[in-house]
Amino acid sequence: MYLIEPSGWLANAIKHRSPNYNQRPDLADISLLVIHNISLPAGQFGGTYVHQLFSNCLDCDAHPSFDDLRDLNVSAHVFIDRKGAVHQFVSFNDRAWHAGMSQFDGRDNCNDFSIGIELEGVDDISYTQAQYTELIAITESLQSYYPAIITASIVGHCEIAPGRKTDPGSAFDWASYKNALG
Image (spheres, rainbow, N blue to C red):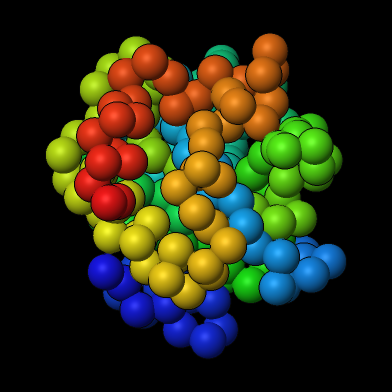
C-alpha cells in the first residue's frame, strides 16, 4: 500500500504538478475511481509525451497524431507506466481533468467526485504485471483513505463515457484486478 499524505499526494510517487486541475466542489464526495489508458503516439510506449501533454508543453508538431491534442488541457491524478513507475500529476484533493463529459450512477461531471488513474497502454495490448501490482496497491490505499470508493465504484472510462471512450479496453483484466482487491 501507499501512504497518502494529507495534502492528497502519494508519498512514494514521482511528482509532476500539472496545471490542469481545479478545486473540487466537495472534497468529502470522493467516491469513484476511473481507470484509463493512454499512449502517445497511440500504441507507442515510453518517452515523455504523456508527461508533456499533462503539463501543457506537448509539441503538437512532433507527430501527426498530436494535431488533435492542440489546445487540449487534460490531466490525471496518477499515471502508471509500463515498468510500473508511478507518476502523480494532481493531488487527490483536487479535481483532475480526466473524465470529460461523463456520468456515473445518475450523476454527471465525474471529475467532481472521482480519481483518475491512467495506465500506459492501449485497449487491445495486455497491461504489464508491474502496472497491475502498482494499480492494486494504489487502489487499496485509496479505498482506505476514501472509504466511499467501494469496488462497485471502480470503473473504466468506457463505463462513464459510453460511445465516446473505450479505455481501458478488452486487454484490461477486470476479474483479476478486482479479485486482488478482496
